[in-house]
Image (cartoon, rainbow, N blue to C red; front, side, top):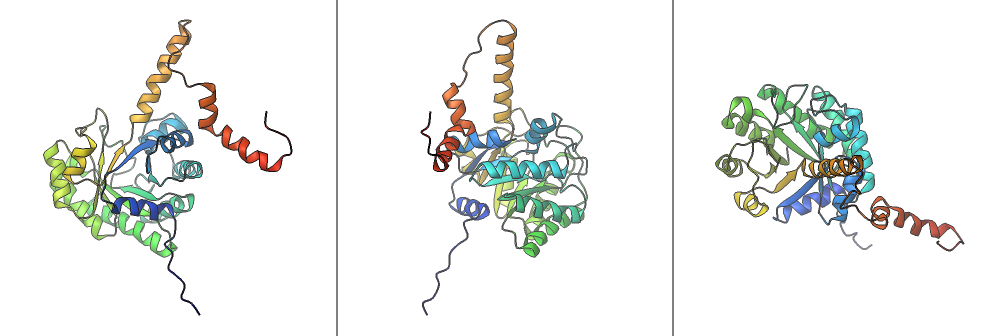
Length: 298
């Protein structure tokens, strides 16, 4: 009997892992809904990040201050993953409770199709990492969240990567943030994310002193300098997320269009109706529909 060749599962997590192992910086624009996810894939990126800031704004029109629930975030993961074949790295906030809630979050995100889930060490209700009012839990509790995340995927047989985020730089300094991140790695995290370093020197310390894959968060107007992808790669980052770029651009474009309509002017820089139909999926729908119809397309 011939031996059966080993086939690597073609899961979102497997595709993300292979991309990170390539050694090239992974740049991920962030989506907040299924339409923005479709646009990211259409633009030719290799993966995307699902931003909690963006989901909270898109889904409930509220700030990223812990108001959105686990169920709403999981549903957003499901809707986004159903729209794209790209790996989706999804914001899991604090895990929405204690270690048992973290386990549920990891399991729910994996079943919804996420390639990675991010768990952070903030005290609930959490805050955007570049706004005021951030507090973190003690180190032991923070590490237990990552242990619980790792246990959940192992016990459930889920292929999902864990991004471990610390916001300790804000109130406890970079040394504490680095100590937490190293402990997260030891607890099973795949990607380490030290939020809001204040300058390039701190970013270099993060990449030099920590093991494994590192993530940079490029928030326009935030505490961290916005560096070109080539510089981020040279420093030692493996993943650069842009959590607010698309939403900021979309808000400005919608404001400009609304201002024009209000003032009686035709809005500028609109997508054509043909392009709009393509982007939201009409062309694919009609093509598939023809398999089940004897009628010719209009």
